[in-house]
Length: 412
Ligand code: NIG
Ligand code: FE
Image (tube, rainbow, N blue to C red; front, side, top):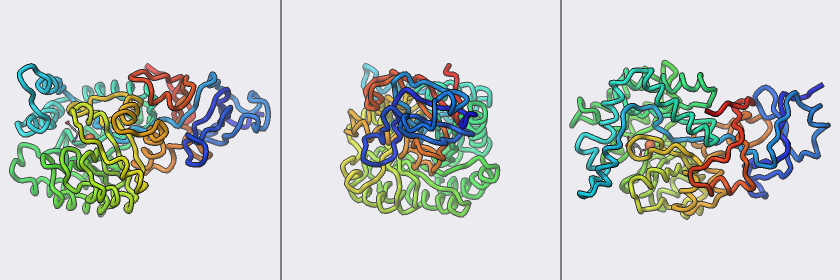
């Protein structure tokens, strides 16, 4: 009589549980799943019987490695239109236009807002579905999706509804973050405080009541929102019982990390211009530093986040794609691991923790991110000889199988 629904054998487990072994590795391991959760794992020799008698279905890892399904904890996945003309302008032969210049001239985020407001739910769904499938092909099973290209009640709702619908359709874990404070819409030009009031009084409470919001984010920047404006929005989030996250210190040092820490944020994201004091504040608050090397790369940034300070203070570091049409058209989380390794100096071990255990924490999710009994059976099986290989390839995904809630998924 089979004890479990399914079993993975013939390979090694990178459990990512902190401890003595690198990657929390169990060599020649076995992992059993029951009812969508991990029921047992350990060395294969400790299985209670022959594999075929232990589980209804037995999967071979082919000598490779099993990791937790990867978690992309910062994306702007749902949008319409393209910003490739801005890319072309930045890299033209007649001088280059900067990212902030484009934003100040009404392009940038607002160009995507215009395209997104005019798009039907079906169009938004089709674009986001294609991008989600690309992430899945890189071993991603959970994705955070931000709104922020609507900036009005109806369009912000549509973006979050599309994200929720994609979660139902694909079975992937989708976390919805409200980013109404992403840019100032034209109708509120010169009146940012009124726009924040509109978000606090109308948009956020309505969308929260509809169950569309898992967390609240804001763009704290000289081309975004001020400290006082973010504090007001986050106070409203707290009243509604919602956790917060912050786009912080991306383009300039503005005390964003300290602001995120003061607000008890799950994470502060970007952080190129953060200081030692910012790192200390994040550590004290237990906030995760989310590194976004795709935006660093795309914007030609040269200032690297204070990685050594994060290490010394014990700030967990996550890595995400920041997939968006402006600053990071990135659809490979393993490529972001490579960038974090080569451009920011993370070790391959820190990179894998950054897209599993630490990314789960950046989303406040305690049920995934490691291989351990009771965790969701969201898994990625890889044809690799060592977990470091996941940070090594540039744009190639040696994925053998992705598993969501115990079920292998078909890759398109
Ligand atoms: O994370 N910084 C603000 N938001 C995005 C960029 C969005 C855009 O340019 O469309 C980011 O980099
Ligand atoms: Fe972002």
